Image (cartoon, rainbow, N blue to C red; front, side):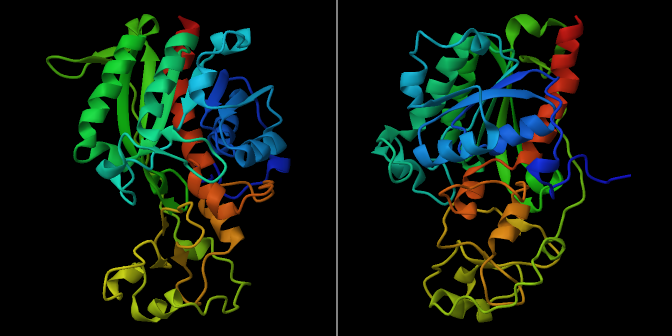
Amino acid sequence: MNEYKFPYLWNLKDATFTKDKGNVFSCFACGGGSTMGYKLAGFNVLGCNEIDPKMIEAYRANHKPKYSFLEPIQDFKQRKDLPEDLYNLDILDGSPPCSSFSMAGLREKAWGKQKKFREGQSLQVLDTLFFDFIDLAKELKPKVVVAENVKGLLLGNAKNYVENIYKAFDEAGYYCNHFLLNSSNMGVPQRRERVFFICLRKDLAKDLLEQKNMFKVLPKIDLKFNEREIPFKEIEDQSDTTLKDNTKISTFWDLVDFGQPFSKAHPKGSFFNDNKSHPDRALPTITADTGHGSWHYNIKRRLNDLEVKKAGSYPLDYNFCRNKPKYLVGMSVPPVMVAQIATEIYTQWLSKIQCS
């Protein structure tokens, strides 16, 4: 018996997508990491909304969506010509850009300021995009809303932001739970902690409610995952033995132990986003920064594309189009992580709603 519910090592050409669990639409879809997760779990993904031309190019190439909208969500949510399919969704999924709350970002200093999430995109106030997404949910009224974001959203002054998210979902007609999940417990060879807001439309929740405490009633859902951590030595590309990096950064590779960031050896604490991998641990979070990240533990080189795809549970035959795999994987929720969550949403909520 396979110890993992979903294999991290897979190919699109070999996958069978049943599409019998319900319809999904994805916002802030990037190249389609979440979409692949829903497909693995048996959902039918109708399409996406995305602002980045390079991302939607990859999305369309791999997923052939029925609908794809290349525009800011502020414009998308105001459309009066959306197809009827989108008003009958089982799940509306979204990962609003999160750099304003990332532990690696400026956090409070960046709140409320316009910026481009990457080159070629429009200027936006990133920390309001979550509420544009909730506005869309209020309009489309899907049965379930899933919103993913960074761990930093739960820390410091950002906690007030979370309270506003709960309030906005409540006003939109949804019960809201949030969970801090680690992909390394879910069959992904990467330690990626992310917050997931899992929300159920109030008129569907009657038979699923439980008393959380004296003041709060919420629909019951259990998202506990305990799959074995997949260490880097199980996914490393042993055929790649070349010395690929002789830059200044690489000099710190010699000075740190397995699993340590290069900042441990740098006199000013720089290069904290570079680290020497540990052979017996899952890799740290794969970031979208193509200039920094994890290095092999025994060979002075950065992770290669094959290792990055495995760490992200991306299919090995995925067409990245004009994007570097590390950027796209770093921007995405790992497909296997989403497949695990989507399976539980169907089992614990949607299947019971459909039978009632």
